[in-house]
Length: 80
Length: 483
Image 1 (spheres, rainbow over the protein chains, first blue to last red):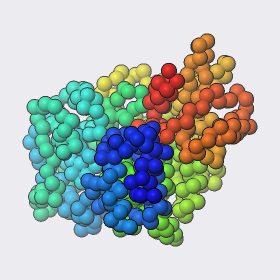
Image 2 (cartoon, rainbow over the protein chains, first blue to last red):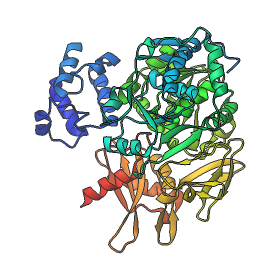
Image 3 (cartoon, rainbow over the protein chains, first blue to last red):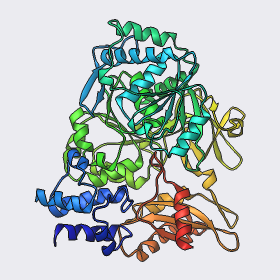
Image 4 (cartoon, chains in turn orange, blue):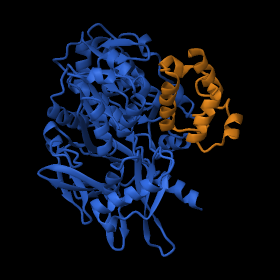
């Protein structure tokens, strides 16, 4: 499964949006737009760690790409 | 303070990894306090609308030394709420940072807090001058005005003297022998009581060090142990929701290794610590959590101690020395403390008192001077003539495997009878069996009168800024969903 596909699948299970809606919103800030809340965000980072063995740092959290599905997919891809 | 060694480290600003000794910190505070003194004739309140920072902490101390009332306003509040707060404060001088500035529309006196590192040192004899300023300060005058985070929508302005904060902090410290070897990790919002009394005043009067980590967020949770290890913190004030997030975010062994064989103090406040969260945290990390109980108005009332931990059973510890109590007619816990607030700025204070005793709004029991909080009097559900305490149901429900968090509230049915609704979060997709298990556990532990009428599965329980469950928002969500 492609990384972006994996992320969209994850968001569809943890938010009220459908796969189609998430694909359309993949460049939106998922925290500011309220797509997921802070608890789900913690789950997301934890699940990325499980799936791709990636631990994010403070600098990563400040990366402007971090809060969008597209940006996050790119960051994970760079680390793989 | 006379015995403090001013060459010792006092504060760490982790945003710049900058360490300040007492000398460096108070030298700058003296300079800022001179600026404040210049406006003292016209302005008795210094209103801070700022995020957690060394600049804000210095602002409080500078206000203390200038004989002014430090007024703390959370920049995360909505613009309208901030405007209402500002309208309710007279004779004010407003200090903001970037976050605060964006929330203030128009003001006659507005000052932007500068970079603390660039503030000049007032003089060479910092210790003497600082002590002099503290001696000049009348500790029984108004010093601090905070605004409650409130889940009812009514933000109340709570007034305290410096003496109140020092007395209650000292009473708390005595139980744990908090001393100058302690290093506190500061994560609580710095404009509420837990971020000021617990996380600044309490360590300060013990001569302990303060590491300003910034306001807690999910991002901070992922680097929590790295930051704690880096600054060698050994004292913490955290809320139950912070504990839950740290538990979820920390997968690696760093925390477990750090906690081994170290004397760490984990104080938990601002909301009820459920047994399940306690057990999970204490199982993962070899530490003991000390829950405490207090209100912005009454400050610290009780804390768990190593002795009370042995009792178990959801107590919030021993009443602090000097705390007196009695019970209202419906079992409401009424408290009298030597550090009672001076009053509200925007509410009639008298209606919150029964004689000298403050009506806490909490239901409680006392056994051998140990306090057990059983719920909120306003949350009490009256069903079939029986008083149902939501807190009792929540305690049982959170212990059921699969329930992450929960909150109980009531709704009226078409016959105007109250129904018990359990809002809960769970990662399980199929929740039918889980709900049956919760029902069975509640009836078995509390009896049939406590039966849950409705279940409401939510992704997470809404929280207010201090991590308390926001029942009002949860109930509104529920009503919207069933309409």
